[in-house]
Image 1 (tube, one colour):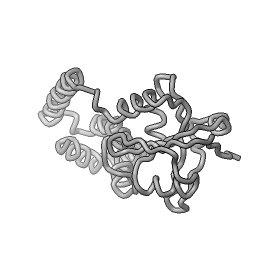
Image 2 (spheres, one colour):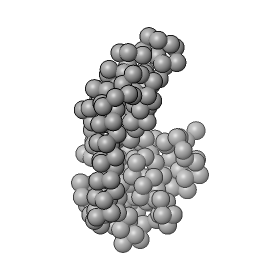
Image 3 (cartoon, one colour):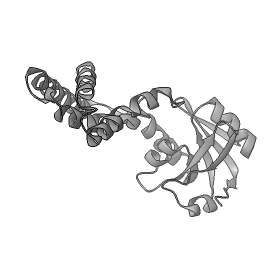
Length: 206
């Protein structure tokens, strides 16, 4: 990773001012890293996807510079290939039974819950099998409200409603209680809590 950052920095310095295309590629490559670090998103495995464009564009930036020639580029290729093989091996050996997503899916099924809400990442990951319907909700931590997440979602999901909300942290839990009320049941899943209600919860997306 350090070698990649060094090569990218050297490549950006070399090609940045050579053309508008190179300038645009360099900006697109490096802008997400400071934006990610300066954002209010937690720095963990759930948000690492925000800097994926860097890893896609970094080889393009290096390839358009003179750093794509010589031992440094070969060394980077060898290291990258080694890391990829190690990742594949570790993924095959990894026991996913304790993964938080699998824990959530198991708990939701075990408690006969079908329709509910969660933040975008958990909503999309936990409902991917199709037997659980979890709509993504936007947690506005500035206004202390819950709202429809209109990105990659349908109004029907919120009109249909649900009776549980998967809460990420204490702030989300406090907002949920303020907006929806106290749950009739709280289920602990790792560091997450599932608030179960004895009423149907709907959201107006208009």
